[in-house]
Amino acid sequence: MRSLVGLLGAVFLVMGCSSPGAPQSTDNDRPMRIISLDYCADQFVLKFAERDQILAVSPHAGEDFSFMRDAALGVPSVRSSAEDVLALKPDLVVRAYGGGPGASALFERAGIPVLDVGWSPDMAAVRANTLRMATGLGQTQKGEALVAEMDARLAALSGSLDMTALYTTPGGVTPGPGGLVGEMMDLAGFENFETRPGWHPLPLERLAYGLPDVFVFAEFEGGAGPWSAARHSIFKSAMKASHVVEIEGAWTACGGWFIVEAVEVLAEQTIQ
Image (cartoon, rainbow, N blue to C red; front, side, top):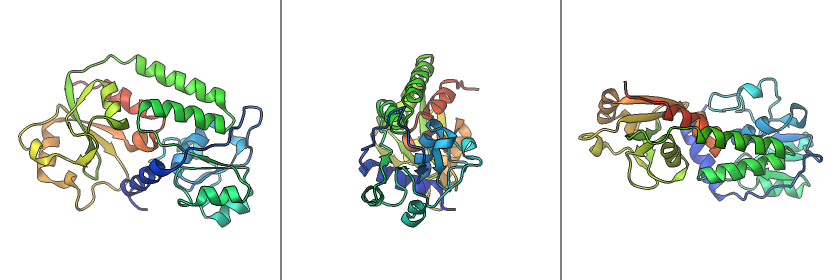
């Protein structure tokens, strides 16, 4: 199976360009033959839809990088090809990137409503998208309850830890201020060691003479690629000399409510 690092790149590229248009289901008019086409879509379907609403999920729903993997046990899966999906006669298709860029238009031409997973670049968007997805699945009350729980958990955090942190993936990239991962570290109380906005290769030159208090290492399937900055001797030495917090890649993938799991783990850290 290909590395999740590469898969995530495709996820966020497509999600950033996709339309968040959605059928407006109500709790009394729920879709009852739902198919989700990719693991980002799986998260929302498995969280909000009742089991008898779900016809099939993607083949990746039960993988380690899927936050809702336990809920996927026993749920049938289907490939994202149009032929396989249409043969099952769904009454709602949920997708982020599954089926390719033309999938939404194709299924809508076939008379099947499509609920597109919206892009969530920050926590405000996570809240809004969570509510929108729950409503589209006919489960508005579940969405409202989840957002309220998320806000309560964030409000319970202690605040600034007066420490710097550097987030890194096995692919050797890190985000600066802004964006969902940057906001995650802000909410946990850390100052971002990377000061440039956007995603960048690890700052190896800076790490050669200065270290963050904490490395936040996101575990993704596949590990560091052969050309990853995470394989560099400077980075390896820096990791050995610093406190390292490992978080599940599933917590930061797909811009879902589950990013709160990562925020809480980070906020609990103390230097040993």
